[in-house]
Structure formats: structure tokens, C-alpha cells
Amino acid sequence: MLAVAFLLPVSVVGSVLWVRQSAEDHVYDLAGVPAAPVALVLGAQVNPDGTPSAFLAARLGLARELLDAGKVRAILVSGDHRRWEYDEPGAMRRWLVDRGVPARQVVEDHAGFDTYDSCLRARRIFGVDRTIVVTQSFHIARAVTVCRRVGLDAVGVGDDSVRRFERAWNRGGFRENFAAVKAVYDVLSGRDPVFLGPPEPGLRDALSG
Image (cartoon, rainbow, N blue to C red; front, side, top):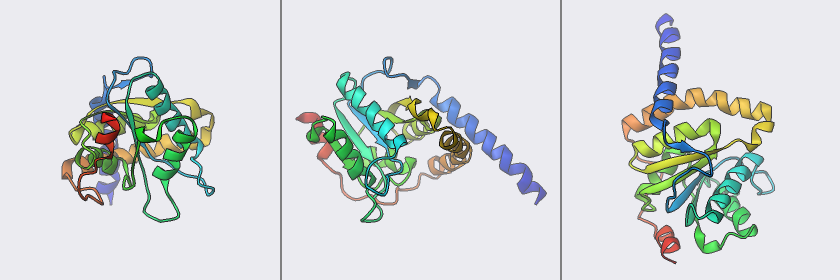
């Protein structure tokens, strides 16, 4: 028991440092981020009425700004659609299209169940090799690190606009400490995502259109 009590904080601290150091020099603001073909927007909570939560809407708004600024040419929305009635990618696509993003430039990944799965499926299923990852700033270092470690030339832009939801923001930042341990395990184990399947041509079509 004493050994576990010692090893757990050591593994958390070590994992957090690894994540931060691996992402160093690869996280930017909107104006400074180098262009890439694709923005990879990571999923988050969808409300019971099917609309994106404030955190997810902020990510989508940032992706739309990247598209409008000519920083990306397509948006890959990746999230949880494990249950028929809960559809993060569908909600993300609707939000973007309703706000003027051409439907042909938005591609859905319905099996992005966590950050690792989203990054690995972007490469292996959708053929992404270079991307701007979009999420909240407390999550961006881990997202960029995982994507880069699975073979993507990834940089990231983090959203700070929902910091006003202080309790949820702080909770998310706290969880990142433990999520960093999982990130180390995922990357070192090289596990397959929950679902693979054949390559999907949607993103290639979006970029060639």
C-alpha cells in the first residue's frame, strides 16, 4: 500500500511533465499557428437537446475561425457516437454547417471515443498526415503530444473563452493530471483504437473539392 501511495503521484508528475515537454513549441494562438490541410476538432459533451455544450461550441468556433482565416481547408470532427441517441460528430457538423461552413468541408469521425482514438483514426482511417488540433487549452498539450506520438505532424490551438465556467474549467484541468498517465500508457502500448475499419475517403474528397 505504501509503495502504491508513493508510485501514483510519481507517475502522475512524470506523465504530466512528459506531456508538456513533448508539446512544447507545437502549441500556438490562432494568429501564429502554421497552416495545415485539416483541423481536427476533438469531441466533448453534447447537451440533451443535441446541441454542443459551451466547451464543444468554443472548439467548433475556433475551427471555423481557422477555416475562415485560410489556415485549414477542411475540418474533421471526431467524437463519441457509441449510442444511437448520443452523437457528438453529428452535433458538431450541424453546428458548423448552420454557421456557414460548407458541408463538403466537414467530415465526421464517429469513433473518436478518446483523444488517442481520435488521433490514431485521423491518420489510419482518414489519411491525415498534418493537422491543427483544436480543443481547450488545458487539454491541448496532451492532445498534441498524443497526435504527434502516433505519427501525425500536429500542432495545436487551445480555446480559453470558456474559462468563465470556472468550476468546469478547473475540474477539466484537474482531470488532465490523471489523463496524462493514460496518454503514456496508450502511446507506449501502441494499442489499436476501439474501432478501425477500412480507410474512409471523405476527407480526401473534401480536400480535393
